[in-house]
Length: 64
Image 1 (cartoon, one colour):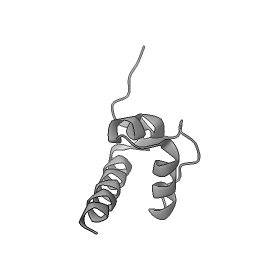
Image 2 (cartoon, one colour):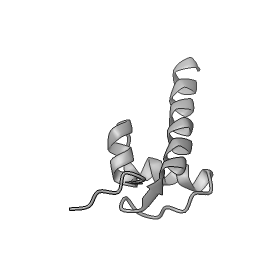
Image 3 (cartoon, helix red, strand yellow):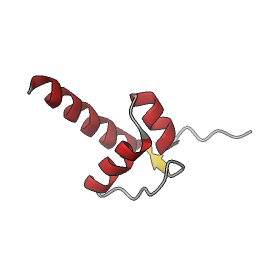
């Protein structure tokens, strides 16, 4: 089995962040990252952008 560490699926990222896949896909739409299903592969850069967005959104929710 070959594992490509440079790619991460939407569902794996969602599990790691503790959110649902649809929330990641919605974030992708806002960030103009092409992702249409939980099996879509994301690059490291795309994953970092999504993580930053989700963390910012979560932090802002707790501050308000």
